[in-house]
Length: 491
Ligand code: C2O
Ligand code: CU
Ligand code: CU
Image (cartoon, rainbow, N blue to C red; front, top):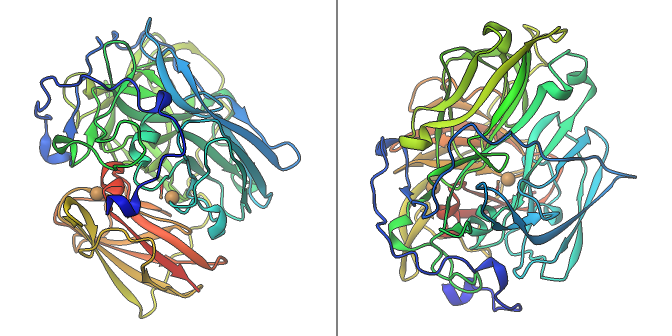
């Protein structure tokens, strides 16, 4: 299997594999609240900075110019932990990559040039994209190569993200920095009066571990990322870091007005789940999900967020006295991972924003007769332990489902452990969870759903417009790299 799936090194080693030698340390500390994570903690050798000292960075916005955006994938150094240098694989050399902004109905081309020492694949997660531009995992962009990914942007306003999707090596390549936001806007959303401008913040949350010299620590079996996929045995279930980053900064702090803010939350972690809440208390008013706005706002005091899910929330900092500190906490984490970032309410301010009681319509999908089962379980992948769907490891030459465009099908996902299940091409709607109505995090158009251990989730899915080959996979990236993926073809 390794021979079949491996990439026969066209490139020299270089920075991608460097920096992980000598991680022989005390490696199996138990993660607190272990039942809430399918993953193992990887501890840093570098000391963690005190929380809430680094200012929240906001990635630079890149609007298209004449429908084109150019991105160079390159190795660069970042200062993630104060005083240390970290080599990242970055879109334009930064992590997160630049935020791409596009508008519904205005196609964009993103020209990626690969100056990295490893092949890459770019996937627009949540994109309604023709198959040749979707980032099929074997459709490699080789080092020194360049290609255009064309996105029709024929879809609702939503928080999308783009990230690496290279067969077998997505986990280490995203971990090293290949992820960024892609926001789709439209007139319908603009007319609502939601908080905007400085009061709209994309928040990419992810956990990482660091070597003593500041380089990223990740337990790849093959640290050159050339041939052997997967991670060392203790992290088979997934890699949890002990440093929580938001937009690439450890436990940052943001100064805010006493006003409403729109927070576009993305969990870009390889495996970590979060339960986000505000301390000393407060509401997260959810206005959107993976596939854009909900039909009406939903108030939460805590929000479970699995890898790759997006939650678009409004927080009204006018509910706190000026001078307050409001911490975004993670009640599934222990120690430092129990905190995410802090907001400091620094001034009173005028606020003309609104959260309308009615948001754009979400047309409910009415399922037809076709049903499919997708079982996500641990299993053998050739000679190795790995992860399977319906008992089978990913085989790019096998098509497991052939849905017809326009049909609404019921897909039933079942699981042994936690598996955040993601479907390419079109979003779905959750019909039931564990035989009950959808949970509080399941509303609206979803493209990733958080499966709990031994749970069945039924969704209604409808594919439109594009014919061809796509993937469904677990978005725990260690599971994905260890074969928890399957192909389907629309026709
Ligand atoms: Cu976010 Cu197939 O991936
Ligand atoms: Cu995707
Ligand atoms: Cu999984």
